[in-house]
Length: 462
Image 1 (cartoon, helix red, strand yellow):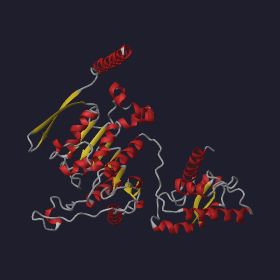
Image 2: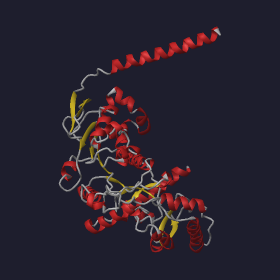
Image 3: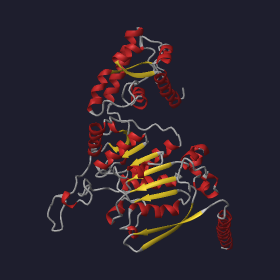
């Protein structure tokens, strides 16, 4: 019994000593030199509340490009981001902390995206939304509490963010994005824009403006009425399927702005599980939703939402943007609608082609599973000469009839690191040329293909 008491006393003493040491260390770290403090006053109109926060002004000149402050030299910031630094490396994390990101739409998707961008160390954030926190949005919002109901979402996020990463320069604008606010929102040369808007007109206008201005943008499509997180993908807008919102946006961008693709989107392959709820007025009877619109064109009817799915959408968006800012190479899961029969066809076609060309198929060093890797992971189900998808959905199924695998280097066997996917005519032309010819005449294509094949060497340890 005496031994147990001694052990307990030693453990308790160690815990107390550890706590005291931590407090002493924090007191030593907090009074750091060279920090200028500013006091901000958030007056929330109509509610009589005033929020005072104190934060460090690391970006006092208002231009993230000119801000030469290295946040990672701050001991607490460095410790906050130590896992990111270990993951990316110091130089790459510095790119993140010196970045400026705009998030437009701060509901279930946008609030989670903005929250993780902040926690990942983005040095400057502009948060934009015209709406307020509602009770029904608490099932999916990243940080809002019941005390925040009625507060503009942008100010709500800024309030909470100031206590999570006060060194970040966070600006909140209670604005609706449109042509009149475009300059105010998109000026300042942001490194990335996140489109988390669920209104078609506003989304199309924002995406078109980003393309026109040459800004990198990532767009979220419909996260409501879905339940399967394993089917969420990032791909070009042209490849998004089963999503009415992205379908409408694609049509409007092509028709009104001549934009065919080139915009990455987060979307779900899952078909919506439920439909919009009918709109009922104060008398409980079904009425025309447009009669109740405060802002023209904005949805009044309710989409049932499982809160986890928009949260995951937002987390995916933040991960994509942070890795892009850090220049960290990530190969996203391709959207390819082939089944195993298609891969067997391509494998058999490769064998028959080798036999007709070389008289034997002994140099084919891939099986059907490896053909699936080459077609899906390396070439995303399309010709190596296509940078973006031209065929999606059922059209992609039909496109297999025009594709075949051929050797990149005729002098090497047909392995996972030496096979490219081409259309029949492209394959004939390829086999009539040497790699030296391709490198001389099409250096960009040559570099892109060799880079993709190098990935196969790395993945298979060749």
